[in-house]
Image 1: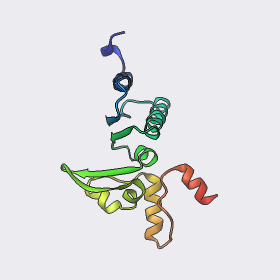
Image 2 (image 1 turned 180 degrees about the vertical axis):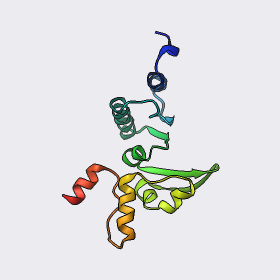
Image 3 (image 1 turned 90 degrees about the vertical axis):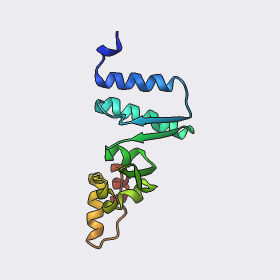
Length: 137
């Protein structure tokens, strides 16, 4: 099968597999979730998490804040080539004002937590459904 006959998602997975075969210590991924269905996306992100836990540095450029919330321990917010914020992902999502300067909104769960916090309740900024389950459970 010729690479140009593959779907966008298949081409994306082929490109990542080609890079991974070289076993680099640092992996840079620009919008790696584009064109992926949920099943392939979950497998891919789980694999990147495993590589990171094994000591590989994973740099992911993404506008998918749900993926950032679930898989990034550190987030750098940029605008016009400059860094607006470089902090842990939870801290970044607790600052919607800074994200807004870069035209980014936190994902739904973090937005809800921020809204509750604005109302005066002391709740943490939750990043995943699992964190929400633990918090309310």
